[in-house]
Amino acid sequence: MNLLPKVIAIDGPSASGKGTLALNLANELGWPVLDSGAIYRLIGLLADRLDLLDKEEELIARLRQFNFRFEGGRCYIDDENVTEKIRTEEVGKMASTIATFRELRKAVLELQRGFRRPPGLIADGRDMGTVVFPDADLKIFLEASADARAKRRYNELKNKGFDVTLPLLLDQILERDKRDRERSVAPLIPASDSILIDTSDLSIAGMTKRVLGLVAEKDLV
Image (cartoon, rainbow, N blue to C red):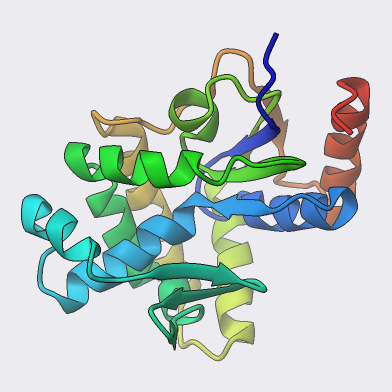
């Protein structure tokens, strides 16, 4: 019997709805969220600034000099609010690149597992149910067509004032999908006991309602 705090693991490709679902569940359940993608985006941004995208050992050593914080939906490197900076596709590409570094992933793994505290944790990422929390109490894997995800990301970035084009975003999403699924370290695949949900034509409310139903079925709260 697992006596550790409960975990809901939400995995899936970029723009499949993981972040939105995680925040909605957090509001409903009162549990904190681990945005693992944000951790890698923070490190990716930092690696780019330090010119260490291809220097894994040095990057790991330098990470100890910085403090990463998540507060009120905002992400910080030391006292700098980098919430908007890390949400660009360019930083997403950097995050996907460094996520293939074996030793870096080991260092981040300990940090991620440290978020598991009462009353429970909602873990959003790409390998939450396969690597980070293989004993998660509920594993969700979100899917959506590349076209649907590109449109979502386009609307999100345009609303934030970014100058983007839909064809470019689609190309970037397809490139990242390929890189995430073919990487040798923690590839993007659903856990064998994940529940797959296609969100291509599913509303946010519908997606949240379905997962809350699964939470109730498993009596997690």
